[in-house]
Image (cartoon, rainbow, N blue to C red; front, top):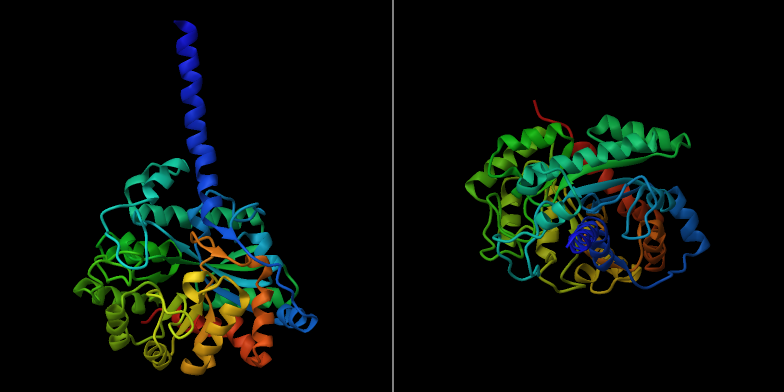
Length: 388
């Protein structure tokens, strides 16, 4: 009997170790893939890329059980690969809830995949039942990574931080900026006071919705797809006053229109595409691109198939060129959605492939500089200033 009990105990220990150790790693490997390539980069494109200030408006890396400052063998983003890709500033999103059977057409808000991930990754118990605490944990992870990186990773909270980051890079220092965002406002838990809580934790951009409708706004992929709620209108006003940039990625078309009607500051669509080159429910119409330009905002074009209909640099470039023609080149940038359960044609170490594709598409070097980071820096500088 004693041998049987010991054997059962061993089985339980192995099962638990597998759940907490291997399961999250295997899940990420199956979700965040690189397929395709290698993509040749011309000598001219490589030289231009080294001169650019590159900003990516959206990555979900903080969701996964990895040390950001260390080179990983899975996924799309970590500090060594950001450095290899010459990325000056990466926006890191906090994913707090995703629905079972996630799809682009209609999702309920009644289920959640992230709870199991939080338990399997042995996150603090407080994150198992609170969406707010999940975001606060992601902020803690980023701060810990910055500490371990010993000066190579700088958290950006305001325009002065951007100035310090660019000055350090111009002086030849190896440093990359990181800015915190949210993937939806379900982490507010229907309390406007939590905007202040997240701001104090370092969050400076907030997506209003993710794959389901919430208390603030409807989603492109929700069941009702409504616009801003009364609470949502108050939240938008509070974010603008605080110096938090509003992100309309995933927001329903009605919510997009509602924000355009009331926004007094430029907004972003951090990661997505355009219907003209990829007609999916995920993407913006030409009319919405013009509205975004009228607001002074911008769209970050993604790298995965649902955004650009092919996980290739050329597909991303086609969407960028179209958006620039419709909205103006000052209103387009990069929004990879790296590590967001996406398959892309390259990781962040090889983003020079986009520079090469834009050159081959005939875009001028000055316009490429705007798209690859200049536009994002302009909007970040302006949007991170709180109002008196």
